[in-house]
Amino acid sequence: MTTDNIQDQIIEEFSVFDDWLDKYNYLIELSAELPAIAPEHRTDNYIIKGCQSRVWVDAREEDGKVYYSADSDAIITKGIIALLIRVLNGRTPQEILDTDLYFIERIGLRENLSPTRANGLLAMIKQMRLFALAFASKKEA
Image (cartoon, rainbow, N blue to C red; front, side):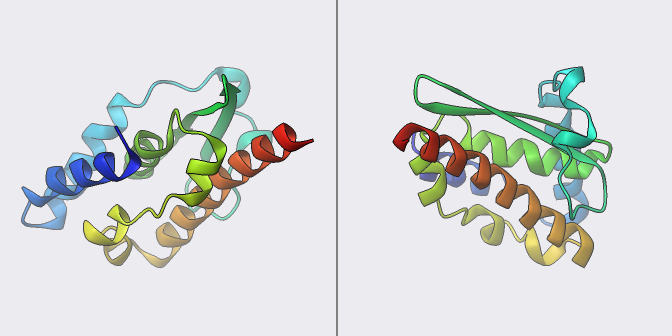
């Protein structure tokens, strides 16, 4: 399944909700599905700077594909990172760098986040892409 297929699925899932309270509740449900990050990665070395809540992200490369793990102390933020992982997990570094995360706008996520949470969303995306860039650079070296 392509990143676009997954994003279209997410858009469809969110389209059944009429108001943002229901969408937030759905994000909370998604947060429960996020696999736990290894305890050794729940440290300051893995924390994302720029987020209002604490968010830890790690990535590993296996067979040329990037796999993320993450956690947050805020359940809505944890739901957001779960969506990002759902779209980007198991992709090549180049696919991650090339993916336009259009689902964020289409479901109205960015416009319904506080400014500090919106900054956190951008910081999460940036960190995930930095991991992909590092893996791509390592491969070229």
